[in-house]
Image (tube, rainbow, N blue to C red; front, side, top):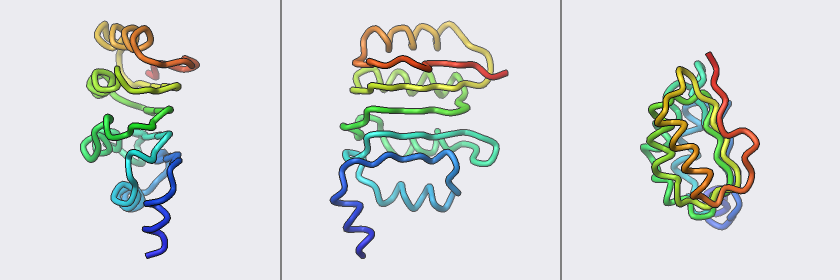
Length: 131
């Protein structure tokens, strides 16, 4: 189809799943080519619970070779820790993590390591904790 052809040739996707329906989320995830994605926003809000885990079960972060911006909204600290381990060597320019629950030393340590060892250039909202 024409839509499928467009998804194969366009190379600058900015994906914002923060208000997507579950059906739209699955549809887009099956069409995109990770190497063409430059920005991702995923969320675990009440309206779309489990979206972050689902997204990272469908894709490995290393597949997103052009990814420059990653936003993880309402993420559990345990899930954040797993993701931070995997994105240390990505070429992100922006990382935004809004966590729920208590901060722990591992999360803070991983964020510290990420900011010193990664190519992160813009640190405007690395972590904010919602209670």
